[in-house]
Image 1 (cartoon, rainbow, N blue to C red):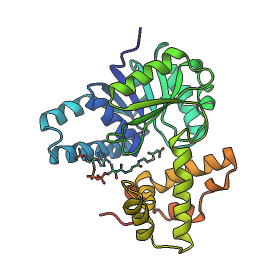
Image 2: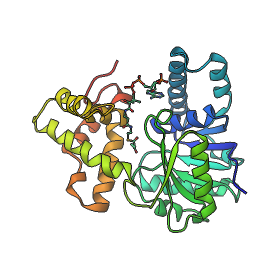
Image 3: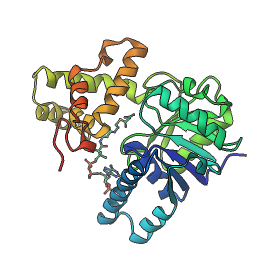
Image 4: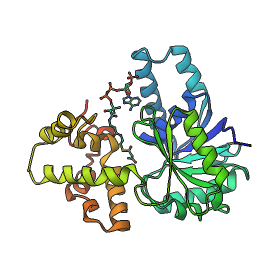
Length: 285
Ligand code: CAA
């Protein structure tokens, strides 16, 4: 019988993690939201409050539903609180050592039937799975930014993922109003494998002063009908995250399309990480 997933955990409350918490809680699912310390927890709670506040202001969510949504989320810094969760989605920074360590620990906390999912964008899910005692219950569940808006989820199936595990996660994605696709464990899966070469190329055009940021973005937004230009999208994704994804894809595929344009690293070092830091290619209020 398919798992119901009425009680899930999300570890890591950055841009993606906080968005994923919102998606679950909006759909009536109880969420245990975990961060490393109180400061990070406060930041994650702030992202959630800002997002639902915006939905209320736009008349898309009633104040009553907003309160109900928030009441479904339990914020904690204690991984042990994940014990009753039927599914845990990890959304910590894109570092393999960090993710492997976390999966090893979460594996010891949850019940034998629980599913462990990573929201990684480009790291090998198989490597993460083998850090647990039961790799067949590990799957990729890759959401897109902003998670509450984008209606697509990649479900990554490794060579050892059990059939019932990826089927149940696929069913859950559908319940959340997302279109799931099942994909193999290859860097970038479908969307990022296609997207990031293009984003990197746009950054390189900007870096070499081939065109201005506004003209590059206008070309793709107005000329090609995309919802936003590539540099604005880099700011939305976060330059630190974009760098990590490109770097991982480059190391795995050695395609120079993915060799990160040097300016990305320079901007990250200077604290220009995009929207989340108030400045990236553009400045945000
Ligand atoms: N959280 C919650 N809701 C948000 C949001 C956020 N961060 N940003 C926008 N929204 C909602 C708005 O509230 C609004 O909702 P309603 O229509 O219900 O009122 C809706 O989205 C549209 O927002 P806006 O009117 O403010 O702006 P827009 O129409 O320009 O849309 C956008 C903004 C949704 C970001 C759109 O520009 C877009 O889809 N851009 C492309 C994003 C994209 O490519 N994402 C994938 C990135 S790659 C990735 O995520 C993979 C990875 O591994 C990094």
